[in-house]
Length: 142
Length: 225
Image 1 (tube, rainbow over the protein chains, first blue to last red):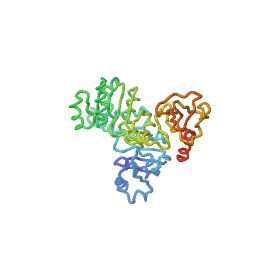
Image 2 (tube, each protein chain N blue to C red):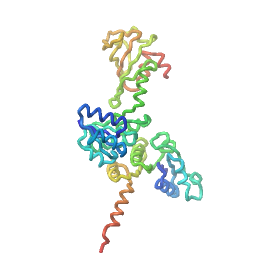
Image 3 (tube, chains in turn cyan, purple):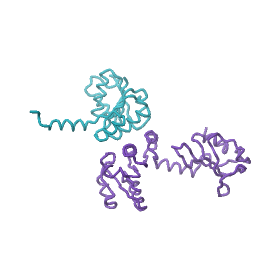
Image 4 (spheres, helix red, strand yellow):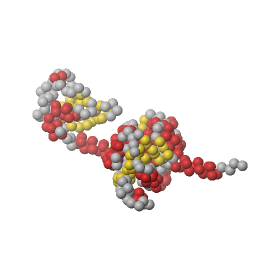
């Protein structure tokens, strides 16, 4: 599979590495060239030597998306640090480029729910954190 | 009318003020605390502090009863998102979005966010009006209806000069709606004869400019191609 990941922060870069290790073709797009180092970190060889791809660019720029290979992406992951950016680029991937599987990180649980109902595959780390806290607070079953 | 204005920069603030002067009810939402405190002095209860891309902030502002949502922040993603949610989740009839980077115009269109207004585009259009390229000016583009109105200067070597409007075999999907001559305009009749120095207004389907220009300003159409 060809996996494209926009936003190589902690989450994006970790997912990129594991997808590459699982044998997928992986292309990462991030506006900060420094995020490339996060992809190299902890690997015996550089991201490129491991056959990962990296493009510097802004996700809203169509040229950058195309350069990173969105036209042949099977999976698109939006994991920048901005909910709004993620929601917009995910819809561009889905509606304009027809990417089959689009996964979006949305911190705000309310919007994650609503956009989930609209057909986007949303992941809300905040929602999970809330649930875990609630579970941790719940009285232990006697 | 009840209007929600998102983003209290220069555009949002002036817009809100004008709407209030015209007697409309307005809520102006601003997500930066220092800026909110500034506008709150002027707008008092009409100013609200919060990130309007969050649903509860829009709900607190009463989006369910809003007639119009205007998103004019400096961030195109925010403007798209606010308008999309207003239109699709809260079924607000009318939205207006500001486009900061004209290159994002396609994204607004893709998500059905119309009208999307870009100051850069507006100024470019004004420049075009002041300094017409090959005598062609775009007066109005009705994107959803897929129609546009253009103004053309009839150049002295135009094949239409001396011909009656009814004899000009314009492409399907175009129509001369007005002729400007000697400082005034009129609606042409079938037997109106086009003269050198006339300006004509046409309504046409998008994409016909080039073939239309060949009729009225043949040089221009060569230069463009």
